[in-house]
Image (cartoon, rainbow, N blue to C red; front, side, top):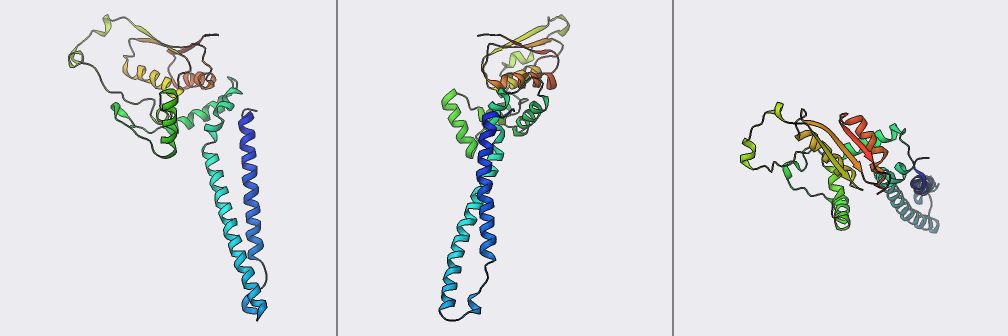
Length: 246
């Protein structure tokens, strides 16, 4: 069972909300199908029935409100499902869980907005995403939520001196190079953007390899999910090496 505790929490939430929805719908059906009309009765009986119907209308409004709230809770729970259970899903997975990794990676890619932050342009999130990012910034000095919205292939600003841009080299005379990136619990999106930046800016003829060295990370996203991404979406020159202990 991949979802473990996270799945149990979501199931309990869904069960409670669905129960409220079913109960509300039953109440709506019951109230709307009550027999009798104040127009068909006279005298005190009509007044009593009218009062009952007014009370029923108030009850219907409350039930409808509960249904709307329940539907909103379900929608939000569904939208946040991957984020809420990501850690539990990955901690219970093995390297053979290709389908699960593929789904998580596609969800990550769908969250990205092409062109956002290109050339160092400032970006500001809104709503819940902004609030979450600000909390992360205060805690880990990085807006990880914003990072997850930026493309892995974002174009960085060219900070070279103009004289450096005019410098010419003979590619054939230059040696190849290996880029070694040592990381420890680096945010997943930041690490992958670093790798893509190297691939996008280095001359492929000179870049021999990119070696990612995991210095004992405990972040589950940097385990099987990272290995799967490297294997399925990056060239063979990108490798992952792992230290057994920090």
